[in-house]
Length: 314
Image 1 (cartoon, rainbow, N blue to C red):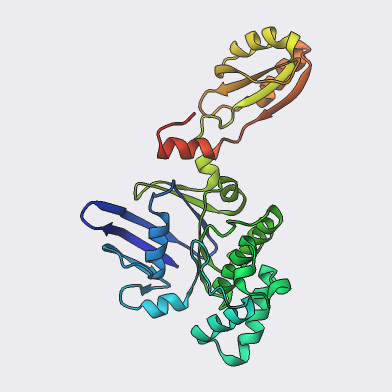
Image 2: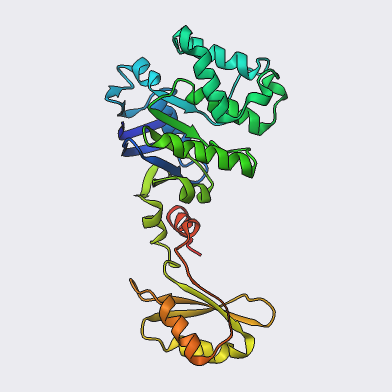
Protein backbone atom coordinates (compact mmCIF):
# COMPACT_ATOMS: atom_id res chain seq x y z
CA UNK A 1 0.00 0.00 0.00
CA UNK A 2 3.02 2.28 0.52
CA UNK A 3 6.15 1.91 -1.63
CA UNK A 4 9.18 4.12 -1.00
CA UNK A 5 12.18 3.66 -3.30
CA UNK A 6 15.60 5.32 -2.94
CA UNK A 7 14.09 8.45 -1.41
CA UNK A 8 16.48 11.40 -1.06
CA UNK A 9 15.97 14.90 0.31
CA UNK A 10 18.66 17.55 0.21
CA UNK A 11 18.46 21.05 1.64
CA UNK A 12 21.09 23.00 -0.26
CA UNK A 13 24.46 21.51 -1.22
CA UNK A 14 25.54 20.59 2.32
CA UNK A 15 22.56 18.95 4.05
CA UNK A 16 21.20 15.54 3.05
CA UNK A 17 18.31 14.88 5.43
CA UNK A 18 17.19 11.62 3.79
CA UNK A 19 19.72 9.49 1.94
CA UNK A 20 18.40 6.62 -0.19
CA UNK A 21 15.56 5.29 1.99
CA UNK A 22 13.54 2.34 0.64
CA UNK A 23 10.76 0.36 2.30
CA UNK A 24 7.21 -0.90 1.73
CA UNK A 25 4.22 -1.14 4.06
CA UNK A 26 1.45 -3.70 3.56
CA UNK A 27 -2.18 -3.64 4.62
CA UNK A 28 -2.47 -4.65 8.28
CA UNK A 29 1.01 -3.40 9.19
CA UNK A 30 1.68 -0.76 11.85
CA UNK A 31 5.20 0.46 11.12
CA UNK A 32 7.02 2.23 13.93
CA UNK A 33 9.39 4.81 12.44
CA UNK A 34 12.20 5.42 14.93
CA UNK A 35 15.29 7.55 15.06
CA UNK A 36 17.03 10.29 17.05
CA UNK A 37 16.12 13.94 16.51
CA UNK A 38 17.30 15.07 13.09
CA UNK A 39 17.50 11.52 11.70
CA UNK A 40 15.11 12.27 8.82
CA UNK A 41 11.84 10.74 10.12
CA UNK A 42 9.57 13.77 9.74
CA UNK A 43 11.17 14.71 6.40
CA UNK A 44 10.48 11.21 5.05
CA UNK A 45 6.87 11.37 6.22
CA UNK A 46 6.40 14.80 4.64
CA UNK A 47 7.65 13.41 1.32
CA UNK A 48 5.30 10.42 1.51
CA UNK A 49 2.35 12.75 2.10
CA UNK A 50 3.37 15.26 -0.56
CA UNK A 51 4.21 18.15 1.75
CA UNK A 52 7.81 18.09 0.52
CA UNK A 53 9.07 17.16 -2.93
CA UNK A 54 11.91 14.60 -2.91
CA UNK A 55 15.28 15.45 -4.42
CA UNK A 56 15.37 11.92 -5.85
CA UNK A 57 13.51 8.63 -5.58
CA UNK A 58 9.82 7.81 -5.67
CA UNK A 59 6.78 7.30 -3.44
CA UNK A 60 3.67 5.34 -4.44
CA UNK A 61 0.52 5.00 -2.36
CA UNK A 62 -2.00 2.40 -3.57
CA UNK A 63 -0.09 2.46 -6.85
CA UNK A 64 -0.39 6.24 -7.33
CA UNK A 65 2.86 8.16 -7.69
CA UNK A 66 3.12 11.25 -5.47
CA UNK A 67 4.99 13.13 -8.23
CA UNK A 68 2.50 12.49 -11.04
CA UNK A 69 -0.78 11.91 -9.19
CA UNK A 70 -0.52 13.86 -5.92
CA UNK A 71 -4.27 14.42 -5.41
CA UNK A 72 -5.08 10.71 -5.65
CA UNK A 73 -2.32 9.99 -3.12
CA UNK A 74 -3.62 12.63 -0.70
CA UNK A 75 -7.19 11.38 -1.06
CA UNK A 76 -6.05 8.04 0.33
CA UNK A 77 -3.90 9.34 3.20
CA UNK A 78 -4.79 10.59 6.64
CA UNK A 79 -1.92 12.69 7.98
CA UNK A 80 -1.26 13.81 11.54
CA UNK A 81 1.78 16.11 11.34
CA UNK A 82 4.04 17.14 14.17
CA UNK A 83 2.30 19.68 16.40
CA UNK A 84 -1.17 18.96 14.90
CA UNK A 85 -1.64 22.48 13.45
CA UNK A 86 -5.21 23.79 13.33
CA UNK A 87 -7.00 27.14 13.15
CA UNK A 88 -6.96 28.28 16.79
CA UNK A 89 -10.10 30.43 16.58
CA UNK A 90 -12.20 27.55 15.23
CA UNK A 91 -13.96 25.04 17.45
CA UNK A 92 -13.19 21.33 16.87
CA UNK A 93 -16.64 20.92 15.27
CA UNK A 94 -16.12 23.84 12.88
CA UNK A 95 -12.62 22.59 12.05
CA UNK A 96 -13.85 19.07 11.25
CA UNK A 97 -16.64 20.50 9.08
CA UNK A 98 -14.02 22.58 7.26
CA UNK A 99 -11.84 19.48 6.72
CA UNK A 100 -14.87 17.53 5.45
CA UNK A 101 -15.55 20.31 2.93
CA UNK A 102 -11.92 20.52 1.82
CA UNK A 103 -11.86 16.75 1.30
CA UNK A 104 -15.14 16.97 -0.66
CA UNK A 105 -16.85 14.38 1.52
CA UNK A 106 -20.41 13.85 0.32
CA UNK A 107 -22.66 16.31 2.17
CA UNK A 108 -25.07 13.52 3.08
CA UNK A 109 -22.31 11.69 4.93
CA UNK A 110 -20.44 14.58 6.59
CA UNK A 111 -22.33 14.66 9.87
CA UNK A 112 -22.16 10.89 10.21
CA UNK A 113 -18.40 10.78 9.56
CA UNK A 114 -17.74 13.69 11.94
CA UNK A 115 -19.76 11.91 14.62
CA UNK A 116 -17.70 8.74 14.17
CA UNK A 117 -14.37 10.62 14.28
CA UNK A 118 -15.44 12.58 17.38
CA UNK A 119 -16.49 9.39 19.18
CA UNK A 120 -13.26 7.60 18.28
CA UNK A 121 -11.11 10.47 19.58
CA UNK A 122 -13.34 11.28 22.59
CA UNK A 123 -13.84 14.94 21.69
CA UNK A 124 -17.54 15.30 22.46
CA UNK A 125 -16.96 17.35 25.64
CA UNK A 126 -14.97 20.10 23.87
CA UNK A 127 -16.63 20.35 20.45
CA UNK A 128 -17.76 23.95 20.94
CA UNK A 129 -14.63 25.37 22.62
CA UNK A 130 -12.13 27.38 20.58
CA UNK A 131 -9.19 25.11 19.74
CA UNK A 132 -6.80 27.72 21.17
CA UNK A 133 -8.28 27.15 24.65
CA UNK A 134 -7.82 23.37 24.59
CA UNK A 135 -5.06 21.46 26.36
CA UNK A 136 -2.18 20.04 24.33
CA UNK A 137 -3.73 16.58 24.60
CA UNK A 138 -7.10 17.71 23.24
CA UNK A 139 -5.42 19.65 20.42
CA UNK A 140 -3.61 16.44 19.50
CA UNK A 141 -6.90 14.57 19.46
CA UNK A 142 -8.44 17.19 17.18
CA UNK A 143 -5.52 16.57 14.82
CA UNK A 144 -6.09 12.83 15.01
CA UNK A 145 -9.82 13.29 14.33
CA UNK A 146 -9.12 15.21 11.10
CA UNK A 147 -6.64 12.52 10.01
CA UNK A 148 -9.16 9.68 10.33
CA UNK A 149 -12.25 11.69 9.30
CA UNK A 150 -12.44 10.33 5.73
CA UNK A 151 -11.56 6.76 6.83
CA UNK A 152 -8.41 6.62 4.69
CA UNK A 153 -6.68 3.31 3.83
CA UNK A 154 -3.29 4.82 4.75
CA UNK A 155 -2.46 6.69 7.97
CA UNK A 156 0.77 8.64 8.53
CA UNK A 157 1.12 9.93 12.09
CA UNK A 158 3.97 11.92 13.59
CA UNK A 159 4.07 11.35 17.38
CA UNK A 160 0.33 10.56 17.67
CA UNK A 161 0.35 10.29 21.49
CA UNK A 162 2.50 13.37 22.13
CA UNK A 163 1.01 15.41 24.98
CA UNK A 164 -1.56 12.78 25.97
CA UNK A 165 -1.98 11.53 29.52
CA UNK A 166 -1.63 7.76 30.18
CA UNK A 167 -5.38 7.11 29.80
CA UNK A 168 -5.52 9.06 26.54
CA UNK A 169 -2.44 7.23 25.23
CA UNK A 170 -4.10 3.91 25.98
CA UNK A 171 -7.26 5.00 24.15
CA UNK A 172 -5.35 6.20 21.07
CA UNK A 173 -3.28 3.01 20.93
CA UNK A 174 -6.45 0.95 21.17
CA UNK A 175 -7.99 3.00 18.35
CA UNK A 176 -4.94 2.42 16.14
CA UNK A 177 -5.08 -1.33 16.85
CA UNK A 178 -8.79 -1.38 15.97
CA UNK A 179 -8.20 0.40 12.64
CA UNK A 180 -4.99 -1.40 11.67
CA UNK A 181 -6.41 -4.56 10.07
CA UNK A 182 -7.73 -2.68 7.04
CA UNK A 183 -5.07 0.01 6.80
CA UNK A 184 -1.35 0.59 6.34
CA UNK A 185 -0.12 2.77 9.21
CA UNK A 186 3.19 4.56 9.81
CA UNK A 187 3.83 6.02 13.25
CA UNK A 188 6.83 8.15 14.10
CA UNK A 189 7.55 7.97 17.81
CA UNK A 190 10.25 8.44 20.43
CA UNK A 191 8.40 6.18 22.88
CA UNK A 192 9.98 2.75 22.59
CA UNK A 193 7.32 1.26 24.84
CA UNK A 194 4.78 2.34 22.22
CA UNK A 195 6.62 0.41 19.52
CA UNK A 196 6.55 -2.80 21.55
CA UNK A 197 2.89 -2.29 22.53
CA UNK A 198 1.50 -1.24 19.17
CA UNK A 199 3.71 -1.85 16.14
CA UNK A 200 3.97 -4.99 14.06
CA UNK A 201 7.27 -3.78 12.61
CA UNK A 202 9.93 -1.20 13.47
CA UNK A 203 12.24 0.72 11.18
CA UNK A 204 15.16 2.66 12.66
CA UNK A 205 16.64 5.56 10.71
CA UNK A 206 19.86 7.44 11.52
CA UNK A 207 21.53 10.24 9.55
CA UNK A 208 18.95 9.77 6.81
CA UNK A 209 19.56 6.05 6.32
CA UNK A 210 17.78 2.91 7.48
CA UNK A 211 19.93 1.04 10.00
CA UNK A 212 17.42 -1.63 11.09
CA UNK A 213 14.10 -3.06 9.90
CA UNK A 214 12.23 -5.88 11.62
CA UNK A 215 9.59 -6.87 14.12
CA UNK A 216 9.96 -5.44 17.64
CA UNK A 217 10.71 -8.98 18.85
CA UNK A 218 13.48 -9.49 16.28
CA UNK A 219 15.06 -6.16 17.22
CA UNK A 220 14.94 -6.82 20.97
CA UNK A 221 16.52 -10.21 20.24
CA UNK A 222 19.62 -8.26 19.12
CA UNK A 223 20.01 -6.90 22.65
CA UNK A 224 22.79 -8.30 24.79
CA UNK A 225 20.12 -8.81 27.45
CA UNK A 226 18.05 -11.16 25.27
CA UNK A 227 17.50 -14.36 27.31
CA UNK A 228 19.72 -13.05 30.12
CA UNK A 229 18.49 -14.17 33.53
CA UNK A 230 18.13 -11.90 36.52
CA UNK A 231 18.09 -13.39 40.01
CA UNK A 232 18.03 -11.88 43.50
CA UNK A 233 18.81 -13.99 46.59
CA UNK A 234 19.46 -13.38 50.26
CA UNK A 235 22.73 -11.52 50.76
CA UNK A 236 24.11 -14.48 52.73
CA UNK A 237 23.56 -16.74 49.71
CA UNK A 238 25.20 -14.29 47.27
CA UNK A 239 28.82 -15.51 47.23
CA UNK A 240 28.00 -19.21 46.82
CA UNK A 241 25.24 -18.42 44.28
CA UNK A 242 27.61 -16.43 42.11
CA UNK A 243 30.26 -19.16 42.26
CA UNK A 244 27.72 -21.79 41.16
CA UNK A 245 26.31 -19.60 38.39
CA UNK A 246 29.75 -18.85 36.94
CA UNK A 247 30.44 -22.58 36.64
CA UNK A 248 27.34 -23.32 34.57
CA UNK A 249 28.42 -24.51 31.07
CA UNK A 250 26.16 -22.18 29.03
CA UNK A 251 26.96 -19.06 31.09
CA UNK A 252 29.19 -16.50 29.40
CA UNK A 253 29.25 -13.87 32.15
CA UNK A 254 27.73 -13.03 35.52
CA UNK A 255 27.34 -9.37 36.53
CA UNK A 256 26.53 -8.11 40.03
CA UNK A 257 23.56 -5.72 40.05
CA UNK A 258 22.17 -3.19 42.46
CA UNK A 259 19.95 -4.96 44.96
CA UNK A 260 17.52 -4.21 47.76
CA UNK A 261 18.84 -4.13 51.33
CA UNK A 262 19.75 -7.63 52.48
CA UNK A 263 19.80 -9.06 48.95
CA UNK A 264 22.38 -9.94 46.30
CA UNK A 265 21.35 -9.68 42.63
CA UNK A 266 23.01 -10.96 39.48
CA UNK A 267 22.50 -10.75 35.72
CA UNK A 268 23.48 -14.02 34.02
CA UNK A 269 24.34 -13.82 30.33
CA UNK A 270 23.92 -17.02 28.29
CA UNK A 271 25.83 -18.28 25.29
CA UNK A 272 24.19 -17.39 21.97
CA UNK A 273 20.87 -19.16 21.57
CA UNK A 274 20.85 -20.62 25.08
CA UNK A 275 18.02 -20.22 27.58
CA UNK A 276 18.98 -20.55 31.22
CA UNK A 277 16.05 -19.62 33.43
CA UNK A 278 14.97 -23.21 34.17
CA UNK A 279 18.54 -24.32 34.87
CA UNK A 280 19.16 -21.34 37.16
CA UNK A 281 15.93 -22.14 39.02
CA UNK A 282 17.07 -25.73 39.44
CA UNK A 283 20.44 -24.60 40.84
CA UNK A 284 18.65 -22.28 43.29
CA UNK A 285 16.41 -25.10 44.54
CA UNK A 286 19.32 -27.52 44.82
CA UNK A 287 21.39 -24.98 46.75
CA UNK A 288 18.56 -23.95 49.03
CA UNK A 289 18.96 -20.27 48.13
CA UNK A 290 16.30 -17.85 49.33
CA UNK A 291 15.17 -16.41 45.98
CA UNK A 292 13.44 -13.02 45.88
CA UNK A 293 12.98 -12.89 42.12
CA UNK A 294 14.02 -14.87 39.06
CA UNK A 295 13.13 -14.09 35.46
CA UNK A 296 14.47 -14.07 31.91
CA UNK A 297 14.88 -10.80 30.00
CA UNK A 298 13.24 -10.45 26.55
CA UNK A 299 15.86 -7.91 25.52
CA UNK A 300 15.91 -4.12 25.67
CA UNK A 301 14.87 -2.12 22.64
CA UNK A 302 16.38 1.08 24.07
CA UNK A 303 19.79 -0.57 24.21
CA UNK A 304 19.48 -1.78 20.60
CA UNK A 305 18.36 1.71 19.55
CA UNK A 306 21.36 3.35 21.25
CA UNK A 307 23.75 0.84 19.77
CA UNK A 308 22.46 1.45 16.24
CA UNK A 309 22.29 5.25 16.46
CA UNK A 310 25.21 6.16 18.73
CA UNK A 311 27.37 3.04 18.97
CA UNK A 312 26.70 3.01 22.72
CA UNK A 313 24.98 -0.23 23.73
CA UNK A 314 25.34 0.24 27.46
